[in-house]
Length: 127
Image (spheres, one colour):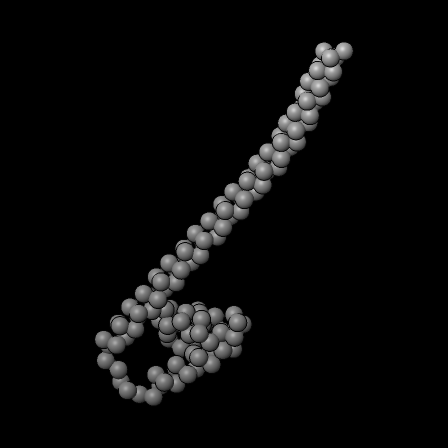
């Protein structure tokens, strides 16, 4: 009788251990799935960060081009005529009305860097 009780207790304990082990395996699978999702999120965020960094680098290159254009214009003697001011005012007004960079270049005779800068600063459709 005592052996039967001991054996019953052993079987019951073994059954409890099996149930606990199954529950732990389910929890482990859930945690592994969660880890995989978080790793995917980290990869996506890393890609987004890289795209932002690339875009920032591109803006830096554009700014360098604008600076170069300004420097080259400053080295060319100006005729001090008011037409330069009129052209600039006209370009600003066109940019505010949504003119493209190519239109600013064609109509006002601006350098590409200047036209891009004016378009970025004054284009109302972008904001």
